[in-house]
Length: 374
Image 1 (cartoon, rainbow, N blue to C red):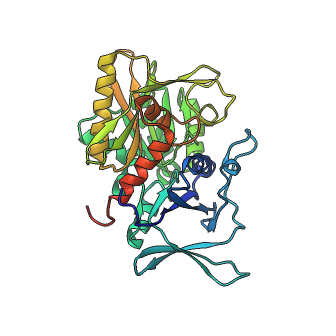
Image 2: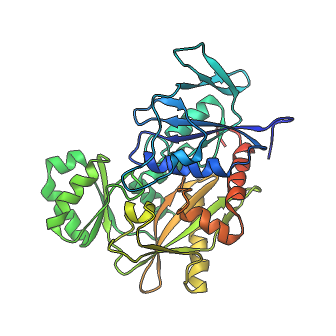
Image 3: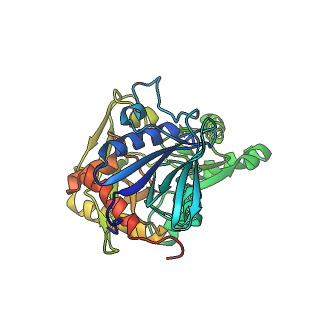
């Protein structure tokens, strides 16, 4: 790691954001804040409120935890505002509290953007950080944008020869103008079908339509979160298997042992409650109990997807293991969750890289990478 000489690395942890995944981003940040070695890092927690305001947040990890289904964490918009500014030596942070003169927090060496969903995971904050000339953890602008938009992600993956499910996209304008044409297109795909916000995550706004009678409500629900909706064939009878990918310090690609998600409660699919609420009946098998040949193929496909999209740093690649033993690539996440229940850190722990070492590795990758074209 290209560590600053004679001082700790100044690390800005950015979380919250304007998307529907605001609370999950806060939970992720709490886990990362708890894992950081304070003898090594000078940590500046920066929260982005749902209205877009940047504030200097608390460094207390427990305040960013989910304590129950009726209490999801969020950024306190009333805290002191923070601005990212360009300095002669890079980029710095300034606190602008109306009650006192502006306070400079000093230059930032690297940013850890723990934002999920639009206005963060989609290349927007990555572009801003590139403009400011500050290093950051994770994928760049293009890979972040492509991976956030499930429709374009499928186009890129299919062009790279990777297996994906049949799909169609629907815009709010198209749905309002000619709903019958949309229904006919989905009928050609076949039921049941999954309806998803094209640029969403954490299973928010996703519904399973078993027939045309359920399709309208599913599309209307997804459009509440995104004016662009992805509809794809349901992988009936499939097992949900995932793989973590990390960029190696020498520029190569490393993968984890696969893991499987098994829904044992009343949930028909891996929805928000099953993912994040601790009392839900979800079982995670790390490593997955799948044939050795399937595990090797899955890890190879995950690495190929990482390279095809142009990822940097990290990604979690999700698959369907079909009843006939074939693998279908579901999606690629450039900033997977780091909550206590998240699969990405659990898969790396099972592969030999524990949580604190994983966080250090990601920061090291960001520190050795320049901003700009590469």
